[in-house]
Image (cartoon, rainbow, N blue to C red):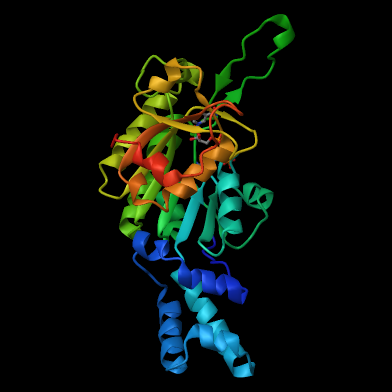
Length: 329
Ligand SMILES: NC(=O)c1ccc[n+]([C@@H]2O[C@H](COP(=O)([O-])OP(=O)(O)OC[C@H]3O[C@@H](n4cnc5c(N)ncnc54)[C@H](OP(=O)(O)O)[C@@H]3O)[C@@H](O)[C@H]2O)c1
């Protein structure tokens, strides 16, 4: 079972604190929601500081003001959106988790993994909870109190043993009993969406895959799993849920450097018919996080790929990227 422990509020630098106060996207994207305890703390800091603003006591530190600083830092951290990344031990999920942790002035990161081994793999911090998305009850502690959810869980096909490429064989794949796409990509994603809805989550980013418009896509025959069919069903469920969403249908994933290619968005698998149908996991991770920051990303579903390195201009303006998308599903 998961242990629902939040990251202890850590101390931060005064410049970071100022940055927190300056960044207003948080308020526009996420109406503030505080844990009951932190809300009291926040009120206390307001009443006790009376006329002195946070910046004024930052400028004149003394023992008392440092105590106040701690209170206000806690309050500022409490105002940051908490973002849960599920599949946080996966290849893309762990990049998202790391990026969120590096942006501690913008987000409170939380991870969900399936096993203790996965938790250890990504550092074993208290903000990583263990749960199985096939069992809705087991993921409630992770989702409670979360502002935004990034879903990066997926059924994982295993290669059958005995494959020998030197003999010109084609690899065969299978899914473990109970871990077929129907159970993970449909029931598991549905559970996450249902629990998130009950918990009042304000935005869900779901990573799916290109190819879903074609029921005969070769990926569907992989291990008899119909993986793209079940992923698509979960996407539809999210789009119908009423929760603001962003559905990212990634092209073939690559483990390469991110941030150095021009990203391409498309619809209806049109990119699959071009030469640009791959994307790095790092770029997918970045798009997941950027999607939390722009209204233009909400209620959108799109295909995502990139131009090859050194062709085009590396994407930096994500608002413009999301603005190009016109498709809700
Ligand atoms: N591979 C591609 O070329 C490609 C192309 C387009 C889109 N995509 C999609 O992009 C996404 C990210 O892919 P990826 O290759 O980075 O992912 P990945 O490494 O396969 O990670 C999948 C994660 O899901 C977790 N998971 C599976 N069953 C679970 C369960 N019952 N409860 C909780 N967690 C569970 C796994 O945890 P454990 O490690 O503990 O099992 C794993 O961490 C996936 O949705 C994938 O389908 C992939």
